[in-house]
Image (cartoon, rainbow, N blue to C red; front, side, top):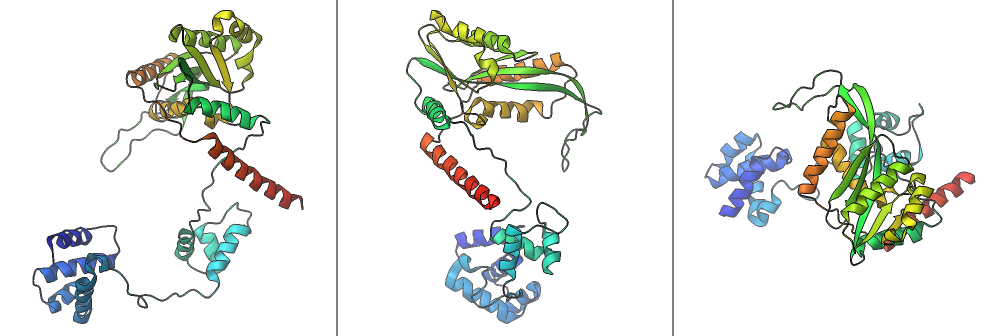
Length: 359
């Protein structure tokens, strides 16, 4: 037994996640390496001495790769009647429980099939099925989807020279939530706690524009997000960009983003450097600043306690200031062609479902 093999066997023998047969065989081989007799090893492992000899022979032939491996033709034989797996899969895909539930659980499907719930769980795991889980999606119906997508993604992947590109949006209705009882701190073996209910102390709208090259974020907070508020924030963005550089802003199709007052302001000759790039409808995932909103929510807002709107405003402002001391840009990698291919595949699937439903 080499030093490397002994190290690997020691890790196996002390593991709490490997199969029991692998752990016990590793222990037996370590004892054998220490000169313990086969009969004594068998007594410690509660097997017979012939089994220990087989373990040692397999180790000699295969090394650590053979530890705990069930030889072909040995081990527990399948006990399910023929066709059981196929029927479990058929029910999972094509039928629903009689009580009207939207999906099967291991217990309800096991009761229907007359098998154990662990058997159902193993079949699902073997076929990578997770009936309890559902992902949300929305395919844009914007007639100019491809055109807008190419424009925005092209801006991310190949930003124009001598220009600053911003990803802009509003996070509306940020709530100043206060918990009804004090939270308990985290302790070893127990997570921190917070009450499930809360007191509302008002809301504020967050305006944010991320410089996609540097990751810096321009922010402001207002009581609303009407056209006048958007225009005020556009002026704030304009002040941060040095003269001589273009300003490209990615934003959604909210009506407040294109009011007559904003169009008039953008039409002035001093704003010729400004260019707006609208994302397709139902495509907020295309706006990079949404990823920054997630960071803010996860790290500051979701578990925060705020006794007033002023308290919430200070918290957001402070967090954003710290972000800008060491900003991290989010790098866009997907090409427009890859996205269009994926969206087209989704559209084709939806059309098939609609056709089957209609008939």
